[in-house]
Image (cartoon, rainbow, N blue to C red; front, side):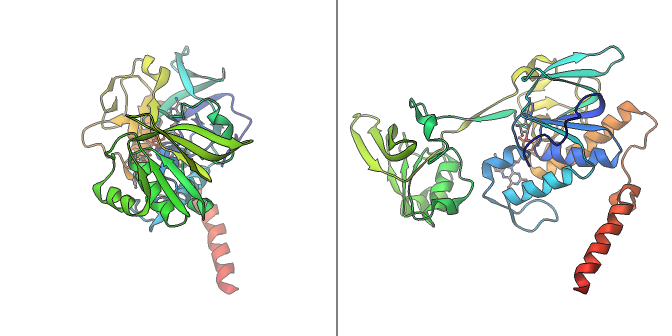
Length: 353
Ligand SMILES: Cc1cc2nc3c(=O)[nH]c(=O)nc-3n(C[C@H](O)[C@H](O)[C@H](O)COP(=O)(O)OP(=O)(O)OC[C@H]3O[C@@H](n4cnc5c(N)ncnc54)[C@H](O)[C@@H]3O)c2cc1C
């Protein structure tokens, strides 16, 4: 999923999508149905957006998809996004916006690159997410081994002594989940209270060794592997050493729109104000997904899909006022005719085996 999908990123695009979360990925697919020349720019090195924060969780509420682990959903969305081979640019955070003569836009990114486009779809969720790193000198040297900021694969903690630092939803969920596979789960939290659902907290109290009010004080190890952790009591400062095989830090994250705030977009408390056609106050710039704000907005994956369709259709009409106001549905869309033949042929071949 990672890495640029094309080196040919130059030229003027019909639509440039900023953000590779559910809204951006679905927009890339749908814009392909409309024959648009599409580019998607993602600040991170992978598609998926906020879904990576709960990649190991089961997802039930996406239409037509039976319960599926979220990382599986990311894979499916990414595959669908690539159906019409859009250009996908990774590792560039879009910052700057300039208007070109004739009304097209030039986007500038933090790597110094620029991207020209007739229309823009802002699909940045709540912005670029950065995990809050541990404020202990030298902690980063353990990040390639056994210091984790997320739990992608609980199985990798099997039979280990795992210390989790944090007291929010993720910390509590991970403690409950890892208790099924780990040898021991220790939770260290600065406060007596946990910021998670009561039911999850009570089940954590039964399965984990919970230490409050404590904070992580030091990481100790041979080479680049943590072997023990010192924790300090918040009030007395008393320290204690605990032997561990892995440390998971869940101290929250920051999300920021960065320089997009300087573009002159009409942004309110809940995001970028858009019309019922997802148009922002700037011509040719649309917004979809969690960053778009309008009455009754649904901040769910399903809501992101709907916004994406509206935004792509609006961008198409902006470029060509004569264009039909939506794509032909996939059952009647000529673009799928050849692909359908191949898919039907492949499924018949499997049936005959
Ligand atoms: C804990 C939690 C659990 C959830 N569970 C569910 C669930 O079970 N079902 C459900 O339907 N919804 C769920 N949601 C909501 C769902 O995750 C969001 O609605 C969805 O991720 C929104 O998608 P998006 O594409 O708008 O934004 P995001 O998923 O946030 O994606 C935005 C992307 O834009 C990129 N980006 C941001 N700024 C820039 C920039 N300047 N330049 C380039 N790239 C940029 C980011 O890196 C990111 O990849 C949950 C949310 C949370 C917080």
